[in-house]
Image (cartoon, rainbow, N blue to C red; front, side, top):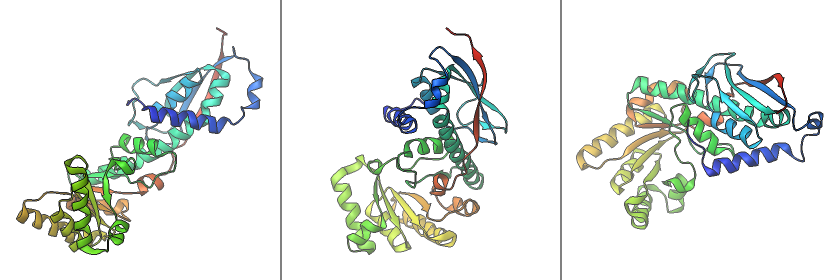
Amino acid sequence: MRALTSQERDALIGYLEDDHGRGDPTSALFGAKDRGRAVIICEEGGILSGLEPAQFIFSVLGATLKVTEGLTTGAMLDKGASVAEVEGPVPSLLAGERTALNLLSRMSGIATMAKKASELASGSSPGARVAGTRKTTPGSHLFEKRALMDGGALPHRTDLSSLAMVKDNHIAALGGGPAAIGRAVSKLKYLYGPYLPIEVECGTVEEAIAALEAGADIIMLDNMGVDGVRKTSSALRDAMSRSHKRASIEASGGIALKDIPLIAPHVDVISMGSLTYGAHPISFKMEMELSLPHK
């Protein structure tokens, strides 16, 4: 389990405040000394993600989440598996229930899809990796990126500052074509030197070669389809052999799970927005087991 960052903790407190509004009127049914225990159950099979956020949510509310022995983040869950017990004041258990379950559900769904995609990539080409994209839910990207990693995928950029990424709109604004790519990479190298990796989004073989010649660290083959990726990757590797320049090759744009085995042997990374926006949430529920004596 990975410790939460301060940014993640702040976001979780914001989620709780958003969910609670002016407070739950039903909590008036219980006093501060009424304690209980509840169990969190997975209602579908999948990869477990979201334990750390769930633990923090309940701890902020004065309750304790204890993970089922032997379970860790990234573990495969069977349908009906008991994930954790939560103990504390009854109002706290109920106040944290929906926020914690929503995160477990969403994050486990992403981790499950990321795991499947990663296994398809490595199974067809050892060493090939799968990554997410910035196509995330506004306000939730920190946890969706965490879920990608829990499923064995790479997070790609967490935010705009993570990488100097020259996209099609940058290239168009600079005049378009291979010459614009050369100017963009040269200026970024001058501004940042070796301290910031540079990725270039390319739509043609000519643009990909221009990015390599300019010194890009990562060359993204965008929306090329399987045949386009094969052709461009081959041209890039030939150019690398002749020039002794090196760059990682990434494929992106409209790639489905079925395409991964066809593309993985030709690239280093496959990035897929569908790992976040297309993942099916895994259902979890929390059931109150019993009341506990007052402390």
